[in-house]
Structure formats: structure tokens, C-alpha cells
Amino acid sequence: MSPEPPEVHRLLLQLAGRMPDGELAVLRTCLADEELDEIADSLISAVDLGLALTEPEVALLTALAQAQDIDAAALAEAPRAGEPPSWRFTGESADDADEAAVRAAERVGGVRALWRSGRVSAETTEPVYLVEAEQDADLVELTAEIQHELTEAGAEPRVEVFHADAAPTRYHDAALAASELVWNPAPPARLARVFDGADSLGTPFFRPDHPRAEAAERKRVLGYLRSAPIAMATDHVMPDVIDPNRTVPLNFRSDGTWVWNDAVHYYLDRYHLAPDPDLVSHVVAASTEPPALDRLNLHRAMGVLTEPSKTESAEEELGRE
Image (cartoon, rainbow, N blue to C red; front, side, top):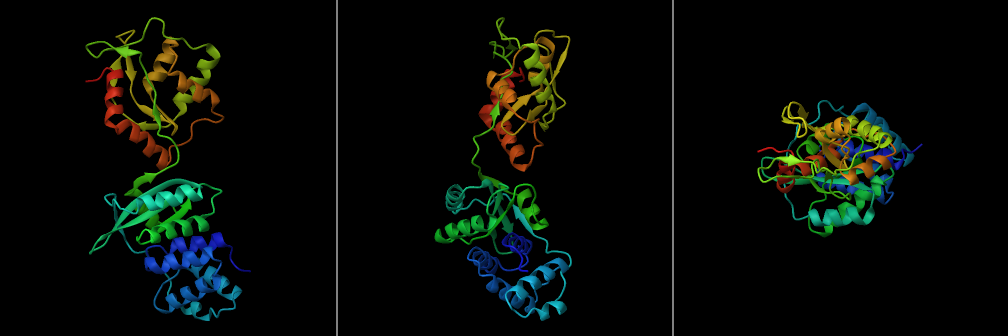
């Protein structure tokens, strides 16, 4: 039985960084065009020229070749892959092809995040696009479309497309660790307000008529706010603006859509002071507890916290110098 296209796609992902980019791009186009015989024949030829494969890769390629009536006997004696090559990546890889990659991602759909990393060699730094796709996305079609758009723009189509739950290989892990977010379809994360304002000395305050949260809503919101993962931890505290003998924790938490300070939870818990009404609406509408912060959501949260205008606003609200 011939391997399914997703299995062949995974095989080609595993070969990233182990065979020439151009050859890999051609094979991915062949997969989109259902030319499985071309893939089997080309990979067997690459093995003859020294490409080393792991045992599972040999098994899959053998099954693919046999399904296409291609002689795979040479694979039995082919060299087996050991430690994968070591690659170095950098986030400093701005590229004119970004616009083309984004156009393709928007048109095809199913993209959760588009990242770019620079693969460093002795001669140059080459951009590699890493596409985190939704679980129901067609990875084969998505790869082919972005490759085509990059080629039309005159760029080398170095595109790695995989589901957002995990990077397939150490090559992809290393590239993602040094990548820059180029595009994602979601709106920017929002930073929740804590106080109603600050006086001329920068001391924050709540207005006397600040809304109080009802008991049922308070319980739901408190549980959600406290259970969210920390996006930015800090040992800093600030005086309670109502009872200066107490201190308020200042960690920032996020669910990927909103970012809030632990002060929001503190004042809701101790004084029943209602948080930002839009944040409350978001929490009440949520059907699950806050998810763990994956790469994209942590990046979105940190983007809010490190944006100069947002940082200044947060510091003013928290009464920090």
C-alpha cells in the first residue's frame, strides 16, 4: 500500500537541511501534483549519491517506490543517517519576499503563524519560512502555494509547513528558536487596564464609583485570571492604593488574546473592583480555561508588553517610575 500524502510530506520535512533546498522544493511540488513516482525515483537517486536515511525513512521510501513499481532494492544497502547536521539560524533575516509569502498564506488559509528565520552559512544568510498550520489545513497544498508565490517573486522557495502543535525536527526547532513573526491572522493581543487613572505625580487611583463585580461573576473571573500562565514574571510589587500597608504582585499573565497584570486579580479578589469590562466579557464567554502559552501566543503577549507605548501605559497605571 502506498504511503498517504501526509506521510510523504512528513518525510520531506524530515529531509529539510539534509538535501539541497531546490531539490526539496521540486519534490514538494511533485507531491502537490500527485507525482509520487517522481518523488520515489528522485529520492532513490539521492540515496545513490550519498543521502543517508533513518530506518523509518527507508521503510517509507521503500513502500512508496514499490507502490510505483520502482526498484527499491538499493535502499537495503543505503547508508543510515546518524546525527543530523548542525545548523545555525538568526532572527536578523529581513527579506523582500515576505509580502509574497503573506499573500499566499492569506489566500490559501489555514495558516496560524508565518515565521522567518535566517539560516547562516559561510557565504550568506538565507531566509527560511516556517509555517505553523491549523490542524485541518492541507499541508501539501499550502506548501505548494507558498513555494509558487515565492518563486514568482524571484525568491528561493525555502518553505517548511507543519501543524502548530509541534515542530517536526531539530532543524525546525532551531529555526523557530531564532525566528521572527512575519504574519498571523489574529488581531493583536490586548492589555487590560488596572486603574481608572493616575494623578499628576503618577500615582494610580480607582474612582469612587468604580464598578463592583457580583459574586457569581467574580468567582468565574477570579478563577480564569489566576489559572492563566505567566507571560512575564517579576519580583516587583507595588503598594496597595487602597491599603498602603499591603503589597500587590505584578506578574503579567495571558491567554493569547488578552494580557493582564496580577493586580487585576488582586483588586477584584480583595475589593471586588471589576476588571476592564471587555476582559470580563471575554472571560465570561470563554468555554475553557486559559490554554498554555505556545510559541505564537507568548510572542503575541510579549509584543504587547514590550511595545513602547503599551509599556509606558502599563507603567503609568501601575504607578512605577
